[in-house]
Length: 180
Image: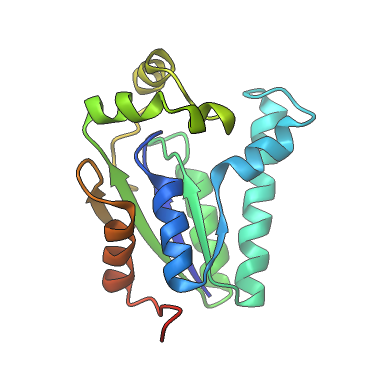
């Protein structure tokens, strides 16, 4: 099992790139907001119970995919310190089933993030959708750093198409494509 763990700040292109990568590889896509919306259907966003359950379900889904040998793409907004334990648990879980985690950090010029964050599609999906919300997140959390305990492929998405970024991920990690 291979897990492509795509992380970066809101509006850096995680889901868009992940969707292109899934088309190229046939990997299953488990994006961040699936678990958020699932838990949020009952529990208020941001509460202790909300975050505990979100982390639990994400980890269980990833572990089961690893057990069953299902290649998966996962998207995540990583905050240094806040999320290190979760990321370590994902790494340990996948490796315990002889899987491989391929970390991909997406980043983007801040002005471009502000432009992207205002899209109507983001609002419809319940994502961060205002410049103020984005600014508040950057003030509160450290969203610009690489995961410290594992090497990541870092890609600036400011001026690259999602398809081009996805192809770079396929090449770097030698992921089989659907046409292989």
